[in-house]
Length: 123
Image (cartoon, rainbow, N blue to C red; front, side, top):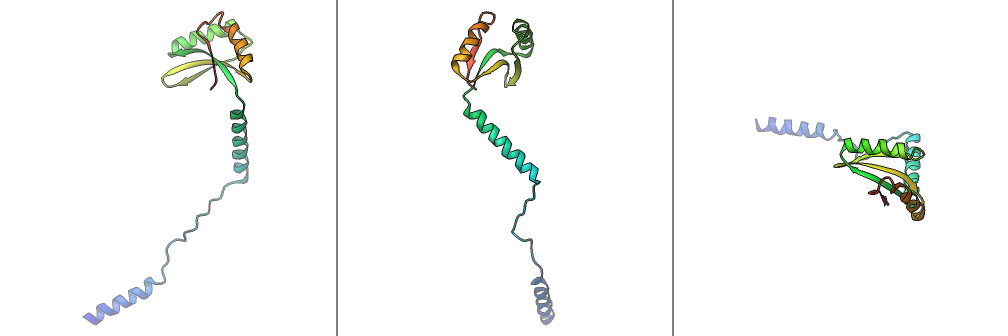
């Protein structure tokens, strides 16, 4: 009986020595165009961060009031594009991307005539 157990153990060890686990090399294959797109995105993001751009925030609050302010702004300043965004917990209306603070302040002065709570923001 002991010899049978020893023999079975020996046979199992011989068979197990031929079994190998997975290789430890990880190969990730990505399409070439994905790498190009990611490089372009990173370069554009860096350019945007380098540009010290200013914007004007007109309103921050609930959705219903944001819609009212957006409609009012669009009627008062049809040449300017305003964007409604949501940043928890408020909806915000912002307009313009100004390359210099002076340009932003000049536009802000015109907007404050109708929207006195507007302010210049550097996002």
